[in-house]
Image 1: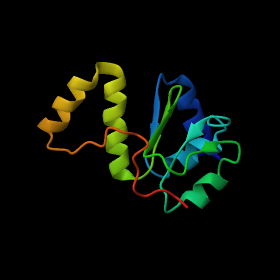
Image 2: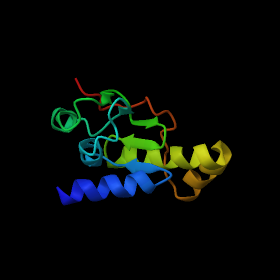
Image 3: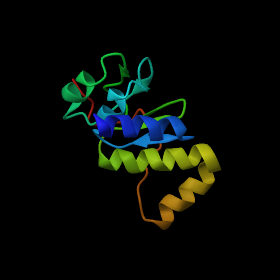
Image 4: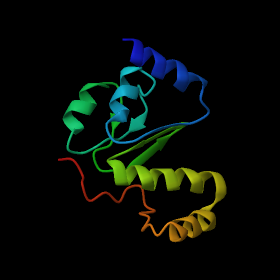
Length: 118
């Protein structure tokens, strides 16, 4: 598939790769998440995990970081993940200030996901 090949090529060249929601299924299909930790939208978890049988899927995390790969659950978890990514680059105080300025209640703990998959 041309799309999957393009995602793989761009991801190979990228310093960091962030996916939101079911985007992790597309990344998993490239093979780049094989033997890495990842998560995805919990309502589509069975479908997503079927796209990456060699991925270490986390059913409980809001977002997961493994090397250069950041994967998140749903869309709001994607915002939390992006703030977590910025925290990893610029520090906690920078991100807390940013979250306040954009009037966003940031879930700082990546393992704090009320939508855990069963």
